[in-house]
Image (cartoon, rainbow, N blue to C red):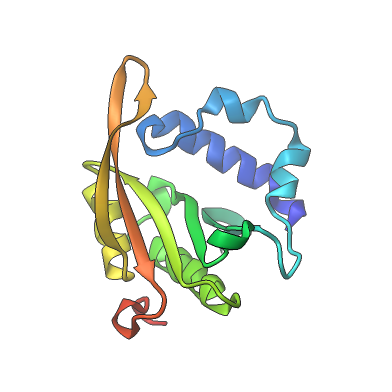
Length: 172
């Protein structure tokens, strides 16, 4: 909900700062955006092209993940999971898996959506394993995907075919 924009902004700015190789955006770029931009990402309209989900422990935002639905006619069958973040203090209790499963459920509920794509930083084996448990399969590696200072980081591209029964998320 837009009322959670400040907590969402704070969590993501922390993520960008602490894990710069995990995100294409930087803390500086996103920190310069007005609160209204963050509010717009929390659109609750039924057919919003971007949906950001939050996981809460009590009143505390303990994780987030987003899904973006393609709007172009030739690509409306695709969606992209983005902005997955669970702070270290909240890890290990299933929040990440619940967020991925919830994004997959949103994708399945959209007419015509057949797949969900994502990228994960090469070497982030913990995140890659989570995505694989939820039905994602790697299909390629993009070398030099993002620049972090003077270093380049590769990204593993993964997808989940929503038509394949075996690709259903664990617990879904």
